Length: 128
Image 1 (cartoon, one colour):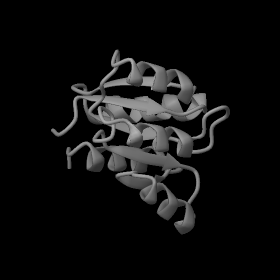
Image 2 (tube, one colour):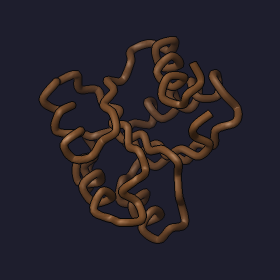
Image 3 (cartoon, helix red, strand yellow):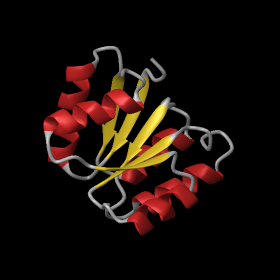
Image 4 (tube, helix red, strand yellow):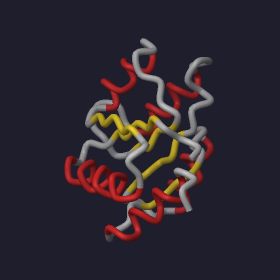
């Protein structure tokens, strides 16, 4: 397995719950910290009190958007190498390209069913 500590940033509580349930369903060896506010996650990351192996990031969030969050961590020498997977409801190729141009490792449209959630997590966590 490639990743043991992941961070999920998403302001939608339902999406957080589905993500965590899918993660538990595919592995019990990955620890997942969640934040509904990108600003709080950014504070933990920049203070080095949280160092994930991988970040899943929603784009459409209040206060600090996913794009702003991504730009900020990619400018930070200590954080820039953490892979970020943008996990969005958008399926726009333009949005995906913008995310990659900002430094996202990958862009994934949030699935609409649990089995697809599990398949995506297995793929990105190196479990398949």
